[in-house]
Length: 236
Ligand SMILES: Nc1ncnc2c1ncn2[C@@H]1O[C@H](COP(=O)(O)OP(=O)(O)OP(=O)(O)O)[C@@H](O)[C@H]1O
Ligand SMILES: [Mg+2]
Image 1 (cartoon, rainbow, N blue to C red):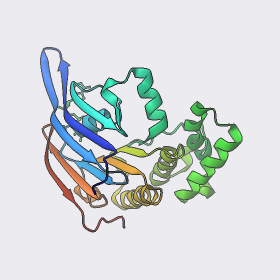
Image 2 (cartoon, rainbow, N blue to C red):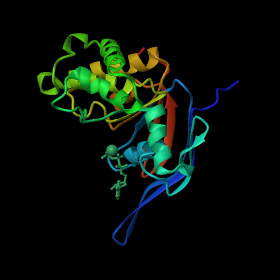
Image 3 (cartoon, rainbow, N blue to C red):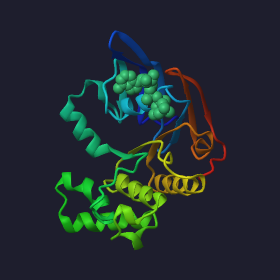
């Protein structure tokens, strides 16, 4: 029997109004993602990748259509329900890492736990475990400026995972890295996501990065033009 999807997107449209112009960023997206799937959304600049990711993560409202995640309708939630939803279910990895410069790697990773009433000691222990998962235990006390780009992004991966979310979203996670480092970081993302049985939705415009995913969703002008599966993802 086919597994119930963790993400179910039904006829999602997004129109931005810029002055008197309507920008149709998404023109009717239908998509399901199974739990544990590593998905890549690929397409050229301006095709609607980030817009789609933002709709899936509940960061921006849809114009019409439905986004159902773990049986919950995001488009029916209030702002405060969405914030709680993201805190409980979702982790983010950013292109520009978004680490706090005056905090150490350990403090950066522990930070998302501070909104959840987790005691400091437990926060630091869990942050340390997360840093270990990405091979950075030895850099715990380094500040971002004392780490390479690849190391900073691995801190970003640890921070996304520390709250144990079911779904990880990543928009161009290797966009600021050179190609060798990109491969290492992508492997690190995919290894951790697979080993912890999480679902990953990642955006990229780099076809090589898509080779790491199980499922590749190609979008153009706000529409899905192709979905294919990698028989042998690079990350296995
Ligand atoms: N906040 C916004 N206001 C108005 N238009 C927007 C907004 N965000 C995105 N758009 C428009 O929606 C379309 C899709 O943009 P989007 O950022 O999703 O593209 P993308 O595929 O992520 O591109 P890139 O690879 O350059 O990041 C573009 O035409 C863009 O100009
Ligand atoms: Mg984008």
